[in-house]
Image (tube, rainbow, N blue to C red; front, side):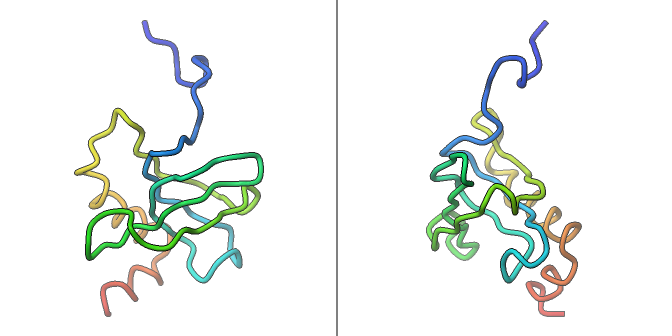
Length: 106
């Protein structure tokens, strides 16, 4: 039987993985961001934000202090990235309804 990830000493977040993060209120203009992790350390993480027109992480980088991170939807190396985009849309709509309304233009 496989041991849970936390017992295998695997990192929670790793450079190269894609994440959709929810930030504590007041951290940034929006509460939800999606991107590819570029770096993780004790201070926080740096994401290259997803450009949804292109469909990949090609936009600006965003640094998120560890203390400002509330939660994250993680696409690790074993996940199918083709499903990440649709999941992020649902995640953002559930976690930040105002942001979802702005994105849809309603």
